[in-house]
Amino acid sequence: MEINKETITEWLKTLQDSICSALEQADGGAKFAEENWTREEGGGGRTRIIKEGGVIEKGGVLFSAVSGDAPDFLFKEKEHSTVSSNEDVKVKPQFFATGVSIVIHPNNPMVPIIHMNIRYFEMTGGVKWLGGGIDVTPHYIFEEDAKFFHSEIKKVCDKHNTNYYSKFKKWADDYFYINHRKETRGIGGIFFDRLNSDTEMSFEKNFAFWQDVGKAFAPIYVELIKRNKNKTFTEKNKQWQLLRRGRYVEFNLVYDKGTKFGLETNGRVESILMSLPKIAGWEYDFKTEKGSEEEKTLSLLKKGIDWV
Image 1 (cartoon, rainbow, N blue to C red):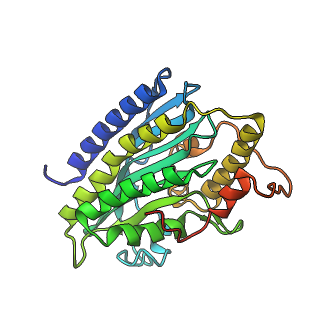
Image 2: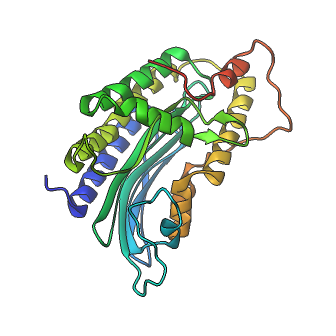
C-alpha cells in the first residue's frame, strides 16, 4: 500500500479490530464497548474498553488520529532534534498523529499486565517518524514466560534488522524505569521513537517493522494468558498485585510521555488515563519476606537482564 497518513490510519483501525477480536476470544466472556470521540482542535478516535471479564479486569484498545497546531513542548525537548525552534514563528506548524495504544490489566495476578503502542507522527516541513513498543509488567515474574516474550519480540526485530532488538531493548529498559523506586516497571520489551530512515533502513522498511510489532501483540499475549489464567492464587497474591499496579500508576503519571502528549494536546482524558487499573494499592514502607516469590520478582526488576 502507499504509505501516507490516510493509509496508515486505515491500517491502524484494522489492527484495532483484529486485536479486539483476539482478546475477546481469549477472555471468553466480556466484549469491548466502543466510544467514538472528537477533538475540538482536530481529529478524534475510537476508544474500546473491556472490563469484568473472565480473564481481563480492565483493558483498553484505543485508536486515535489527531491534528492541529504543534504543541510547544515539541520544540523544547532536546531529543526532537529534527524540529526547529518555535521562537518568533508567527504561524504554528501543523501536526498529525495517529496510533493504537493498548493496556490490559488481568484479574489473576499470575497473568501479566501488557502494554503496546505504535504511533505515526508528521508535521509541517516534512518531519515524520514512527514510534512504539511493547512491554510486559508481571505481578510475578516467571522466567520461562519472560524468555518466551523476549524471544518472540527478538524474532520480530531480527526479521528486519539484527541490531534492533538489542538497541530497542536497552531503550525500553531505560524508558520503563521508575527512577524514584530504582526499579524497572516490569521485564521490559522494546521501545523506539522518531524512527524514520537511517543508514541501514529506509522509511519503508522501518514501516514494515513497525507493522510487525503491532501484529505481534495478539499472539504473544494470548499465549501468556493461556499459560497463566487457570493458576490458583491467594489473597496475599491479590494484595501484591495491587502494590504492583501502584507502581504501574506511578510510572504512567510521573514519567510516561504518551500521557504527557495526550494531556498537553487537549486529548480525551478518559482515553488517556485508560491505562490505569481499576484498583491499585500502596502500603507504607512495604517489605517483602525473605525467600518469597515477591522478593524474587523485585530482584528481577533491573535493567540489562539478558532474557534470550
